[in-house]
Length: 402
Image 1 (tube, rainbow, N blue to C red):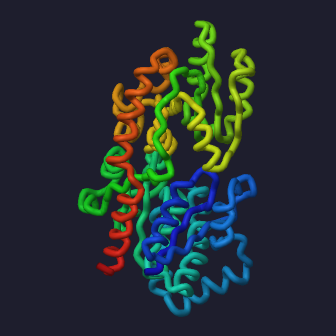
Image 2 (image 1 turned 180 degrees about the vertical axis):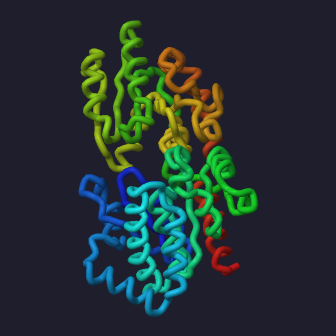
Image 3 (image 1 turned 90 degrees about the vertical axis):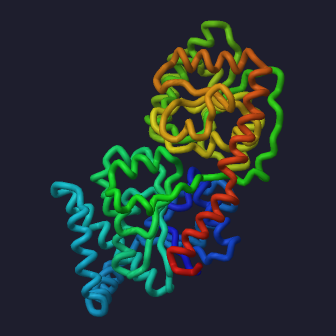
């Protein structure tokens, strides 16, 4: 089976879950061709595996004007009915206003480029991660090329404006939509038609447990870790305010922020203003092996998000035996059992977060108990091999291969 994966920017340092998925499907005998709208920057070349995947991924842009015109003319000459149907679908799923119309013209042209590649390379099925603008291109390219398509929906951003992203139409015309959590599925059900709900499937973003050997927590606790983008939805300012309070109480600790993003400069300024400059380390983007090393050296992983799907970083820490603290948002509660496999607090509640961190630092017995149960939780629900087997079967079924 020849399957295409398409996202706007691939591979990135932050989407190792997609790279693992692609590799796992290839191991299961599927011929997975990866496409990206544009080539990723050098800052994402964090290890050899990413570079190899980058070199084998085909980019739609930049494209010569002559190539784009030729692709349009080919579909007009040989697939006129599909071309007009796809053009109409692009029109009816556009965002309101002139800006939305202009963006949709670009999406349609990107879909023409992708559809031509799908036809020439005999792709049988097209899959998209995230469902946003690249999901729109996926829907249009599949319609134009005549192949089936599917998507993996993560959230949370796509649920902030479901009409903008045409979730109803994307589910309607798909073969199936994989949702990473029951919360994600519920949001898709909220914004789509009930007649299409049978297409919604729960496929977790799992991890390879063999790569994350359990290690009991140390008796002393003082090293904190955050892994993720430095972005507004992650709630990192609340974490910094909580740590400032712990410092006033006399706690000794060190925080590593592993990741980068638009909030880095403002967060660095906030750390200095809070008098935490000697206790907070900005590590930037790091390769996956380094992330695991940081986790093994840490006593707690903290993710104080305002909005999330089901963070892979939490799964990895829990599998390693690192206690976790996060918030009651998105699908996190489907991973972290409060008070048993970790601690959850309400988002934005700096006092509750400070109390949760203090408990981890103060109570070695609690750290040990939660880490054992957390590992069991990941093993039972988020095993990558199990999820990949299910996903591969969905692809085969979508192409009538089973």
